[in-house]
Length: 480
Image 1 (cartoon, helix red, strand yellow):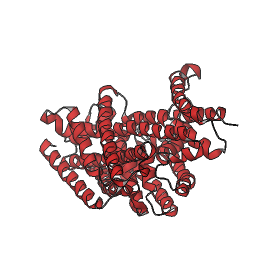
Image 2 (tube, helix red, strand yellow; image 1 turned 60 degrees about the vertical axis):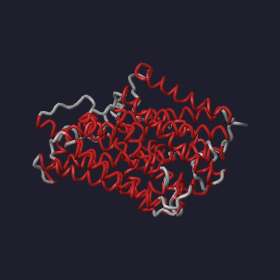
Image 3 (spheres, one colour; image 1 turned 120 degrees about the vertical axis):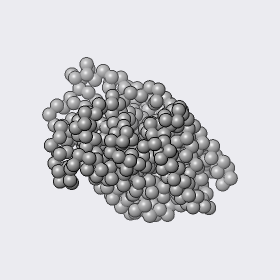
Image 4 (tube, helix red, strand yellow; image 1 turned 135 degrees about the vertical axis):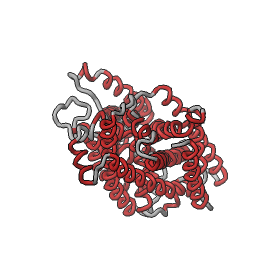
């Protein structure tokens, strides 16, 4: 693919998003930015959430990881389905009953001021790092497809990528995001299906033989039930998947903000149930795509890159599957990453404005000004974090995202679990110290688990350990 073609595709794509943003943000005040005035159709939210949940990590890193861990990622997805059911039946009714804008306001009502601020601060940290990691993938792809050939450095690519998000989200907020995410999800799913069809044709496979080839390949093992010390042992991934869904969706302002724009709790629950079913099917397709990529690479003797995140971009943009796949891939990764990152930027702005700036107590003109500067500030923070990832990260991004979640969402898991399952008050002023101590202790245990626990390795279940430490700490801090 030439740089000129790539630039043309992206120019058309972002002009389309900006036009959509223009019409959806007409007459939008700060209430529309934060809650879309609670008038969103459930089916629009459900479809758009697919793109938000998938992101560039699923689009690139999950297929690339198949060569290392086969289909084991689907063990986590099966656990996610249980987690989504808990969100729909436990957390959503709570949020609607309390009529929340920021879900961390619950911690203020349940524990007090310091727990509330701590919970929101951990979300801001977790979402900033996680979303910047996802956005880093898109910047890498744009660098490969466009900017390298033009001699433009990575930092400029990052600025352009973030600026484009800011342009179409700064005014309409979640009201705009709901529509643009739906559009981007359509592009993402179209790219996924077309890419699978075109790669299968390169391998001379029809639908039936494609399924057979994937099933009989060395990459197809989905369940790992033999070695309990293995980091992807089924029970570890499945249980971790439950809690990953709960914390990264149910305790995450980004995805819950969309759910809270539905007209009532019934429509919000309907959205969650349809979303989780569709998400399971789409993820299975992405894993299958990964197997096809490795089968193709084996067939032609293609050298697998050290960073497996680069496998799909190198094959797609390197002309192996033709211009159609290159164009489809570029649209798909752009749609996937922007659908995730634009809503994250809006959610971070919402959480900071509501939880720390108390924007609901201001006049409308003040609210607009505060929202504007906070939105701009998080855009700049994204840029800094992306540069750090580019300089230091050596893992696949999917592993990086889950590691970040394990250390940053654990205290949120412990706080919400203690709040929901007990009625005990705690010594609120000590909660921030506990929530800082918990991930530090988790890191120490994780680093020495092999020698301390007879060879046991923590995988994604370090999130549970972190949450458990926080929960036990709250028990010790109970206010009699």
